[in-house]
Image (cartoon, rainbow, N blue to C red; front, side, top):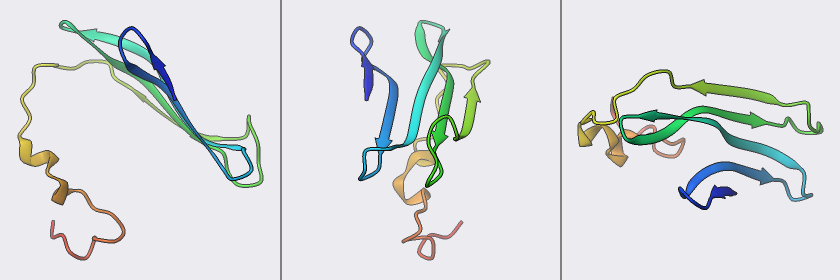
Amino acid sequence: MYIDKEYYALLRAEAFDADGNLVRRFAVTSFKKIGEAWIPRGMEASYVPPAQSLPSQIKSRLEVYEGNYDTQLPAEWFATERFRTSSNTDKIKP
């Protein structure tokens, strides 16, 4: 993990396989100021398919163009029972 010492912000995280090969990477590529808060503006996640190496990778990118930092979202939206995993998909009803 790479963390900015001044802001304690995650800049990049990497995952390696048992042989020490890079297999996943998440990186914050830019920040944006909304009100008085700095938030990640650009984020990139990449995955290196088995038996391949960098630069062969699959990437996803997210860009934040606008936002409202003071938005109050309902707490129930973030209740753990709303999130599904492969082990509990049959227990939760939509």
